[in-house]
Amino acid sequence: MNFKTWLESEGLDRVYLDHPFYGKETIGEFLQRHQIPVNSDGTFILYHGRPKGGEYTELRAGTYLATDPESAKFFAARDRGLDKEKDIEVIELTLTPDEIEPGVHITLRVPKQI
Image 1: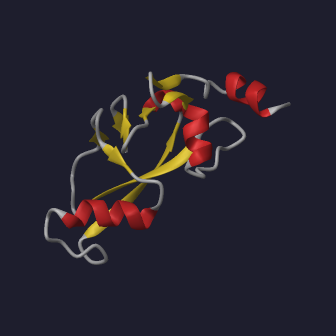
Image 2 (image 1 turned 90 degrees about the vertical axis):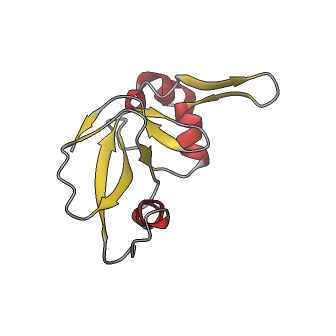
């Protein structure tokens, strides 16, 4: 199966960027450009960092995600004055293309139970 057929079969062909200057980019192309591996079932792993002891069980739509655990720790700690190694926990999320919104930052499109 060629890459284009695979993208279409896994729902990764949704265009998230349609800009007159920058052109179009699909979810699959975004994942490929950022070297985010896609599993055989079309899912992929992204990360969210939060202060330890957080009691919430759902991430809201619009929640920021990271491509690796270290970035998730950094983003969760930087504006809170927390130590990223001591005060932050990282949640690994298995997501589908319809659950994310790429852009400058990757965010959730829908709420996600954790």
